[in-house]
Image (cartoon, rainbow, N blue to C red; front, side, top):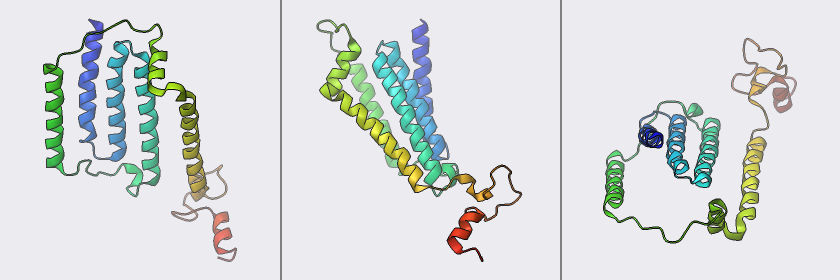
Length: 198
């Protein structure tokens, strides 16, 4: 009974947050709405006893969406991705595709006979699933994942060597009333770039 309640709450929540992706007015909010939808969709996997898949979906979606939101906030011309903007392009076409896809999937769920289990599950389901997905390449994929994450962090650090507090000058212990150089860097950097006499 409790599992049924959790399932329906998560199912309705996943659909609602999925719809919110197309209703909110900024890419940052749409990103976190999509994150919530994926996390809610992962809960039924945990209810089915698929702990590995459920945890994988949750961790992967959190990492992916948070990184995407951080990059949008840093680099979008639209300040922080928070200014109002439309999240939908080609509204009529996308709506027709979405409705058609939903009808096909719903018909498949209701009309196709579900297969019967043959045999018994292995003693360690998580290990068997990892072997089926990655085979002997699991260690390689883990190393590549860490390498990609380190590359992302390094690229951000190298592409923006000055911190966001440089605009307040060289003394970060106090907050000045006005920016020394509005929209730019601190006084020391200005002297280094333009010369001490300017």
